[in-house]
Length: 394
Image (cartoon, rainbow, N blue to C red; front, side, top):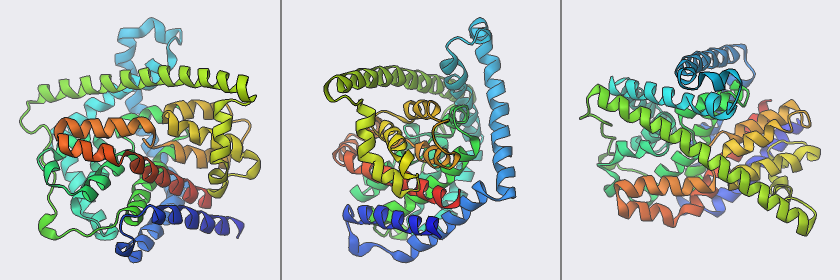
């Protein structure tokens, strides 16, 4: 009973913050929000508590484990001695597999499997979320293609979108994660939390956007995505996706080096001035939110600090911090925090999303840049809602 009351409090807090930031409170349609929430609760229980859900998660994790083995073959050919000596472990074992998985996604895209999956699932989702088909397609395509490359699929229609639709498209990209990076997460977090977060974040995104940015779309306005890379040959496409995967791996590595070094420097500075490090100070800000989503009060400060770290740096830095305190917090807190961390909701993502859109349509890129902080606010609420739902069923 206490967990249910705690969850209801979390809904009130998260929903209240979303409504406060809403651009059209009169346009909020409670029926869709309630049915999305019910579906999400059922899915959370299925993936985190049921035997069938656990079998699905194990199968999904097994698939990625096999893919990671294939990826290691290529990595070992180039860096064999280093891998054997367990040197540069994070880059070689966590980041390099992104290259292979990116190539695999490109192949599935090229042979028209992914476009069919995206359209079918997107159409079904539009029936339950009350949004346009394009927004529902985007929720699936950003999950599969990634937050940057995803927008190439909409290059022909970006200029026709209203500001509200652009907010929804950009917020969805920030609130989910790319399948190409899921394997990397599974080497750090328990796979069941990664799989659950992928699904929960999609539905949490629909719920938060239905509160923050409600609008209706006429059927004739419901333009659909174009076919990505349709004019390329197979090997042109493959080369592009392999290079894109390598670029992502290098970008993530560079971001980690920079952010971890910067946080270490800021921590040292804060310790000298305030006798507390920067992450601990941020923990006080996130403490009440960590508690609201189900973290015990005696663990909420540590967990809040990691939540804040994810916001100001990125999810990999925060996952690294989580690994250092796994013996200090309960398994339930680890599960709630793990679900929270699986998303691209951080400051750097504002620039990534805005830059990707600006490269395709400068005007719309500027539009997205203008509401960058609201994007971060909305996508962070998505992470909190997913974490609260995980806290209810764990």
